[in-house]
Image (cartoon, rainbow, N blue to C red; front, side, top):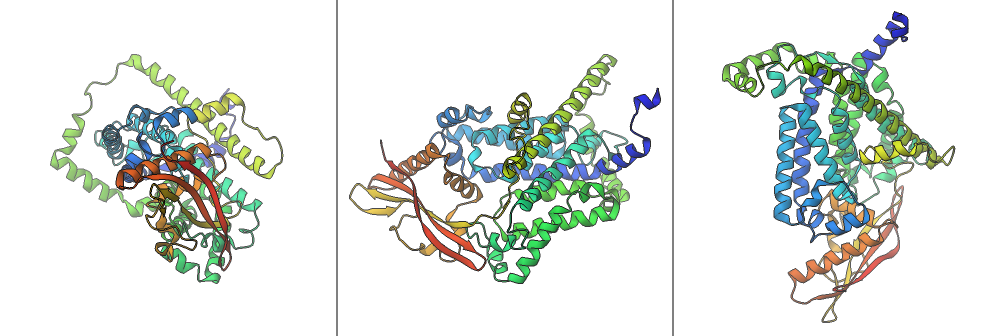
Length: 505
C-alpha cells in the first residue's frame, strides 16, 4: 500500500527535494529586491505617464480596446491626474509586497496590477517585463513572507528551506528562459562562431559608452561571446548542482548579467535576472551572508523598539475556526493543479517557439484550451534575446515634416532634416531615445504588423508640435536610416519611409 501511495523511491524524492529547495532567506531577499524593482518600474514609467498611458498619448484607450481588447484595470483612467492616482496606488501595493504584509494577498494584488499595466501598452515591454511578471505569478505559490517580512515578525519558528511544486516552478522558469534562448542560439551561426557579442556590441542604439569601448577589443569580445554561449548551455547545472558548485555557477551567471547591464541599455532586465538568480544560492552561501546570530540580533532589536508588538497587533489573535481547514486543503489542491497546468503550458509553449523556428514537427503543440488559459494569464514568453543571431541592423529614426509656412523640419529633433547622421547622434546613437521604453516602442514600430500604431505615433507628434510651436505642422513622415552591422563597425544601408500622416486629417 505504501509503495502504491509513493511510487517514487525515497532516494529519488530526496534528490529532487534537495535541488528544488529554496532557502527561506533567499525568498525573503528575493521579495525585498523584487518589490524594490517594482517600485522603481512604476517611478520610471511615470516619466511617460501622458505619452504612453493617457488618451492624449501615442496609444489612447480607444486604440488599445480596438486592437487588443485587453483585460486591463488601467483602461479606467485616460487623463494624467487620474493615471497619477492609479500609479501611486500601484506603487503603494508594491511597497506592501516589499515589506511582506499579508504577503500572499499582496503578491496576488501586485501580479494583477502588473498584468494590467503590461496589457495596457504592450509595445514598450521587453524580456525584463516578461520575467518580472512571471516571477510574480510563480511567487503566488511559495511563502515569500517566511523571512524578513512583517508576516514573519509574528511567527515564532519560520522555515529554514522550502521545497514544493511552487519552488520547482519558480526555479524552472529561469531554466526555461536560458534553455529556450540557448537552443535558439544553437540554431544560428554567429554565436556558434564566437562572434555573437562582437556583433551585438555594434548595435549603436543599444550600447553604452562602456559597451562601445568593449567593442574596440575584438579578442575580449570573442572570448566573452564564447563564454556566454557556453555558460547558457550549462544552465541546467543551476538546478542539477548543489552546494558551492551551484553557488559558483550562479555567481558566473550573475557576473555575466552585470556585464550586460554595464555595456547595453536593457532596462530592468539584468536586474530582474540577478534578483531571480539569488533563489539558486544554497544555504551554505546564506549562512555566510546572513548568519543566524546576526539575524537574531536584528530580531531582538526589533523587539526592543516595539515594532514586533505593533506587527503582531496587525493580525487577529484568535486562530481560524477548524471548519476552515477543509477550505485551506481545497485551496492547496487547487494551487497545485494551477502550478502543474501552468508549467505544462510554459513547457509546451517554449517547445512550440523552438519547433516553429526550426520548422520541424507540429507547429501548434499547445492545445487550444491550454493556450487560451496561458494567454489570459500572460504566461506567454519569447526568449529571443539576440538569438538565433544578433540583430544585423542599427540606425536612427527621423520625422521629416512640412510646416504651414512651407518649411521642412525634423519633428523629432526640432532642426532641419539632414541626410547624414544628426550632430547630436555623432558619438552615441542611444541618446536619440529618452529611455529604454521609447527605444523598445520605436523598434516595434518598424515591424510590419504595426501600421495603425505608426499612424497614432505620427498623430501624437502632430498634436505635440502644435502645442509647443506657433507655426502648425501640416504633414509628417516616419523614416528610419539603417546601418548594416559588421564585425568591425557599420555600413549605411539606406533610408526607409515607414509611414506618413496628414496632420488634422
